[in-house]
Length: 322
Image 1: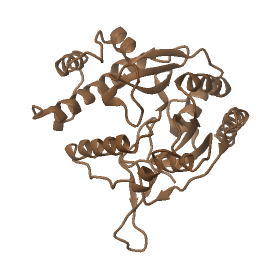
Image 2: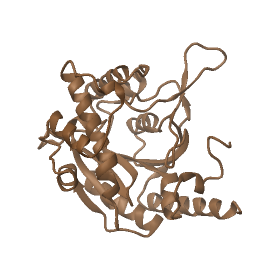
Image 3: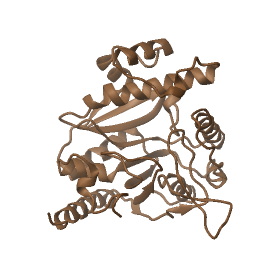
Image 4: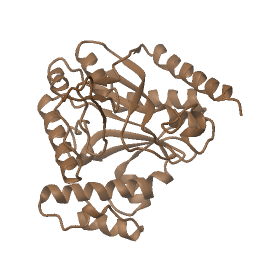
């Protein structure tokens, strides 16, 4: 089979997506792939690189988030990029160690604005619009029969076991304190979402899943009117997680606390602690604009546009043949 159609599809989709962003007043940017800092996340492992025998590693970026946020703080305004990103140990039909993220930041916007932009992107890329906006409460109540904003650890555990799910062995011990109970709650929530809820989302039209439990905030701000929920979203199409994002938390203190919590979870999972990104923290505060940041898996989008079964089908190279 000729590689030309694959290359043409990828180029055509990039062009269509660029048209959407350029028409909306965004500027395309480039940020380094290799940097001294990486944004610590609980369940994502970066690839460390040691240069010239140095004991201090640099990191291949898991996403361009940290560096793009530093541009925002410096007054960049609306920006986007197609970024080469790297995550250790990720390989599957929809995952690879190296992949392409389309990431963007829109200062002064809300999730309503994000929904409108996502609608344009979906229509431009795959010819499907009419985004369904659904809360986590609605999705879990419909497909599992529980409300994640009131569900206890026992509720989620029973729902997970009823669905035939099992957590890794490290989570089978009885949680000793509130932090461990919360970590176990979050793992059951994530498992139920991935295995029970997600396959039912985005069937026929894209689904924007919103109003996430506060413990799942990542780096999203909490809702001013309901502190139980975070202003976060994920976009699904045909059961595939295509994009995620949120209304950004701009407080330096809150960001530092979220990073510390992520490292605590990493430690409990047996993962190495990641260094504090001091340059990113310094960028937060008065100069960091409020708004929405989002990332879309470009390879997954091409896969859906081609009606393919895996991202390997729509890339000329993978981590195994490069």
